[in-house]
Amino acid sequence: MSAPRWVIHLPTTLTSLGEAVALTVALRDSLGHVTAIDFGEATLSEEDRQFLRTRIWCDVRLDGGYRCRRRADHGGPCSTTAEDLPR
Image (cartoon, rainbow, N blue to C red; front, side):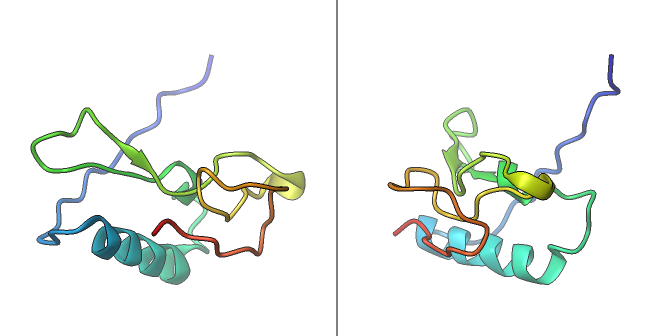
């Protein structure tokens, strides 16, 4: 049995999904080296609808412990380099 993981909820003042995705991408690009953060599991939700989450990236684990960096609903094979982000 493993210890429970913690989730950090970080509210923003952003008002569009596109802006929230862009911020999440910037955070991943700048903090991706921090192994305690699992950006592959990142989701977004509206402030008053937190039960309805939007997954950003595909959550498939690839060789070497990496995750697919393509959008959640991508077509074709998973990739660690593709930056196919949600619109």
